[in-house]
Amino acid sequence: MRDYVICIDASVDIEQRWIDENNVVIIPMKYTLGDQEYLMENRLTDQKLKGFYDAMRAGLMTHTSQITPYFYQQVFGKEAEKGHDILYISLSSGLSNTYSSALTAAGEIEDEYEGIKIEVVDSLAGTGGMGLLLMMAIRAKQNGVSLTDNAAALRKNAGKVCHWFLVDDLKYLRRGGRISAATAVAGTVLNIKPILKIADDGTLISIAKKRGLAKAASFLTECYGGALDASISNDVVIAHADCEKEAEAARDRILSINPDAKVMICGLGPVIGAHTGPGMMAVIHWGNRNFV
Image 1 (spheres, one colour):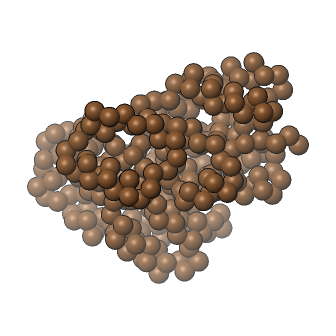
Image 2 (cartoon, one colour):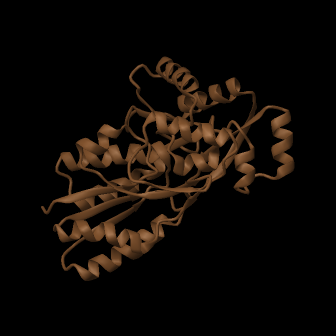
């Protein structure tokens, strides 16, 4: 069996050791903070993430850029030159065009390099959900699973990753066009925190509204308890946008529900954080994403 490398978007949220210890190739992504553009080639440190969210709180505008097919060709081409096949896990096609761009680039590289195989997997996920799929892919590769079978297993299981999000400040959803200005103002006055999830088609949808951060955060862990399927895995990722205390409290509630849970707390990277704002938190695990 020919060796293959695992690639994933820089929007993944996972402990850096998983990247470093398994030679995972990160596809860099761009984000802008104020008038400065940055290329995110790896996870930011906790200190840099805090600086990013503090800058957002101070009013600096943020936005992100799509990865072009040409950029993918450059990254895939480097691995193809080494004789490596590629397993690539993209950000959800319901949230970004990266999956489509990667497919285009993969076709070009396969045509250029005879015998090279590239499997492009739509994660139908974001942030820590991509992290869970990455962990699954790494473990499978370590167990000798082939490129094709690994990709097939990821596609089969992608719909079993649950994402339960809360958003603390509605103005970021308003800027992204997900809610109206009137709804944002009313929600802010009433201290409403929207709860969202990633649906089966990989898009982000609203599923509930809770008054106050405490009730919203508690609801996320209630969703975890109801949707959990420990037969797949007990891995859990809590991604947070500079609200570590709330994330730690969520971890404790999760462990009270499932003492066998393996909870990883990760700062939310700027690619997703630019659209959700500070105070966002997500509980991400394996189970029934249609529980709610």
